Amino acid sequence: MSTTARTGGAAAFDLIGIGECMVEFHATEPLAQATQFHKSYGGDVLNALVAAARQGSRTAFVSRIGDDPFGPGLLSAWRAEGVDTSRAPLVPGENGVYFIAVDEHGERSFTYRRANSAASRMTGDVDEAFVATARCLLLSGITQAISPGARAATLAAARIARAHGVTVAYDPNYRPGLWSDAATARAACAELLPYVDILLPSLPADADVLPAPAHTLVPHVAVKLGEEGCHVWLGGERSVVAAVPARVVDTTGAGDCWNGTYLALLLEGATPLDAAARANAAAAAKLAHRGAIPPRDGAPR
Image (cartoon, rainbow, N blue to C red; front, side, top):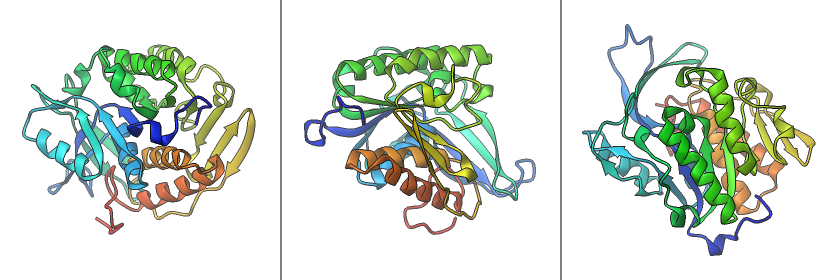
């Protein structure tokens, strides 16, 4: 955590995140042939909040939820996980939907229906008092990408967090299909980095948007490297944390699970290396399950 972050007793929430969570349908075969789908939900920031909540963190989600038939069920599911949704109101509009098809190696392909979703209509008018109640704020390049308003909300929240001594964690989570071009994505990343305390990139996926080698950008960097584990950089010094062997069924959400677990453990007082090792284990466990959110009991689905 940053040296200015408040203690747990002085904050209402350990971790607040801003983003979009969509309705998820996943199939066990290519979409053209699939006849059965499992319905759930997924979104990078919300996935991380659920992982953090399962570690005992007090979490909250800032978003907008469409009042379509899916909206109430989404909110109910998040609340059941212990995620505060007081700043995720139901508003007129539709929620984004995505479909996952997974190949025999666990690699996934996505098909999205998210244009003009309710969450994409967020604006830079962020509730300063609410953000200031957090110990840590989680931001994402995907939130920046979904609309100019969501990008403005992300930057506004980062500025608020810095002003109130709230630690800012940021995952660039670069998805080329969400951006008009790589230069715009790089600009969005660069505008946020001055406010970031903990950088959480995945490499090589995020290399195209980072303006310099990741470990040189902020003092605390945790680089996710998939099967190679992760590297934790503190003040320019690197530590390598080995991956945990995993049975790969679906890679969706594994990095988000890692982020949420890592931040939750840091907030509990774990050392970065211990937090990273335990986050590797949590992400490996997630890989054995389909969809972005693994079941609570770990049972296959």
